[in-house]
Length: 249
Image 1 (cartoon, rainbow, N blue to C red):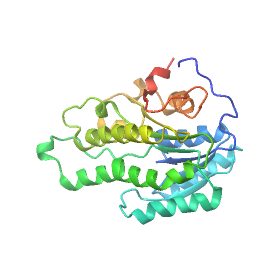
Image 2 (cartoon, rainbow, N blue to C red):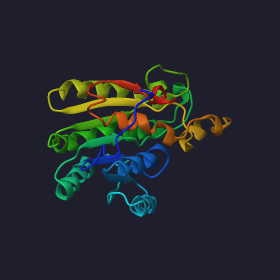
Image 3 (spheres, helix red, strand yellow):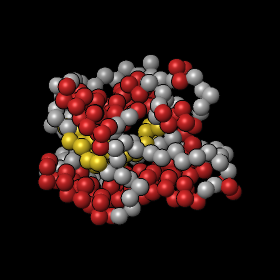
Image 4 (spheres, rainbow, N blue to C red):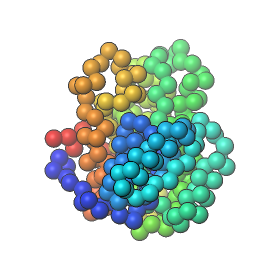
């Protein structure tokens, strides 16, 4: 895995939806996938930041992206159905859905956890992923080589005190990935999860305010793992729980 190198045109003619595409790993994903030929559909709640990433992709000379201002805290199924309808109208199909957006919530014992924060984290990290996936599956079925990628975490594979809603939501994410992988195995849709690990992002800084970010890999350093998961020749399996750190040299 450490020796993996993606072909420059790996994602040519591919349409990839990336959630949380305006900062950190999400922005790096958008730029990287566009660099390798994809038409990236950027999804985030901040229109101004979406426009900025859109402009950066265009300025780099990559394939023109699209963007959708969407607040994943909204639990109305109609919103997610409309997202799929817009993508179908514009592109006719979808080749990959990358669930990158996430809500850290707060670090606290479950005994004292704020209920409103718990429900919000579950909405963004679990319910929104379910709804978006549900309505995008018909579009993914139209692709010859489709992929759904969920973002996991170390605390979603081994529970840890005080990580509360975030950890529980990531356990749910792993479960959703496994169920979907089994359901879609014969549909040419690969379903996997990736744990980025400790990365130099704002979310990590919020969770570990005393940590030196310069000791951590940047989002750009993780991109070989995310490209590998989009490469059906390199990553032919489904139902895998991947660690991005395994790709670091």
